[in-house]
Image (cartoon, rainbow, N blue to C red):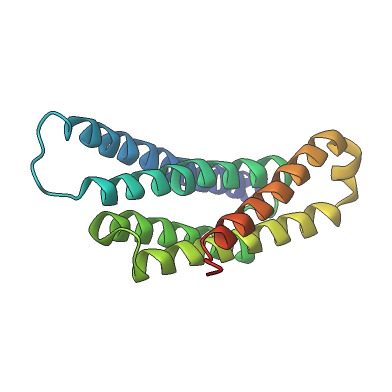
Length: 175
């Protein structure tokens, strides 16, 4: 009995830690956003406005929002898988890619390093979509208990996949 309680407490602490990472992104982007607003009043010359704006937007969507949704989807639909090796590796590599984007966009804007971190995030999000879909489809109890909500999640993941494909494709110049 103590082992089960210990595992539950350990899982709860891990989830809280991951939620705190998402909230840390929120605080960071709020501070960057405030600094961006203040730059209209007084520019200290520390950062290029456009570079910092790219850093801010990427950290907001991929750090705060994507990380929160990652945790939420796994916790709601696959609580036994949330700390499995595959999702754990994807989670931490996504965090690496977000921090890489946060720093590299602020320093150099759209350039080699920031694009590499963005590409890494895209690839990892595809792995997340694939494994999430695979694991939820192979779990018959989810289909019974969460059939309607899973259809909406699948729809969101489907559109997420194609929005990423479109954004990558729109950067290609046919001339």
